[in-house]
Length: 159
Image 1 (cartoon, rainbow, N blue to C red):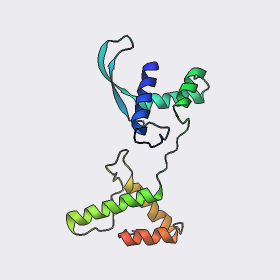
Image 2: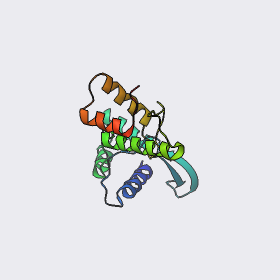
Image 3: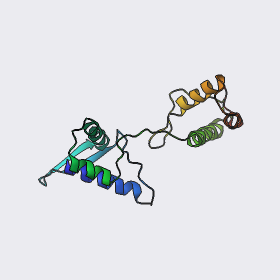
Image 4: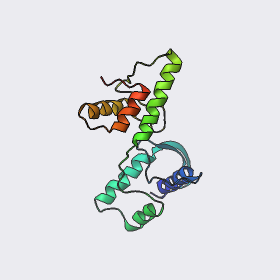
């Protein structure tokens, strides 16, 4: 446990080195290279820090996490429940970048994004799924006029 906690502390330091606050989460698929055992031996094993963090959350929610471990995790800013919501403006910016790239490559963009398209950012954003949700919201009259104007301006097709 201590070795993985030290890895988490290093992850937090890396995430906050430029002064940004840590969001209290580690992506589930985030892996680390563990080069030593607790006894100091060499192993070079890959471990999933993200899954370890999720396991700590599960143990906490079951009421089985030792109090000292809970306090250590809270001290470095771990959030027990993390709902990741990407702001509309971030997704819109990704759509604009996608459209610009299509224009650059082809001289035209047809206003569509494949439903399964994900950005190359880390973590990847599900741009295709987001576009489909915007289309559905528009069809149901749930999309604000401002968002409709912005999506039209970038060239999004509604169908």
